Length: 178
Image (cartoon, rainbow, N blue to C red; front, side):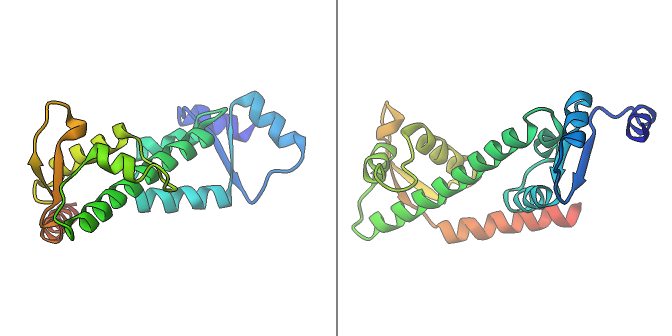
């Protein structure tokens, strides 16, 4: 009763109850009937850690409160974001390794080389990563040979360390302004 009253007074769209655990059917049935999200403290802690590490927006985290499957959808979103970052690291590693032989690499090359790796990125994920590099800083990777089909455009690692420093300086300036 108190939760419903509080929800109405605050014109809240969602209700979430956080606790160490939820055993027994009483609270679970009530939550299901009232469309309340039940979130364990451990789950909330994992969300907070992921939000910090991955730079999730409040709108992203808000998915947590959507019943019946908000928590699982948020977990999928977090996994996707982490995968994108893992692929970014993999591409940089691959470009760095190939730079030792002075070979330019395409998204298709990386896809073939890494197809049996634990990450096994598909070509679309790789193309998204190369586009991200272009948006962040043109110096991270350098285009060597353009191709009509972007899968075959070749790249080499650029002055990535300097690009990282520039991006870090931008982040610091933004944070200082907040």
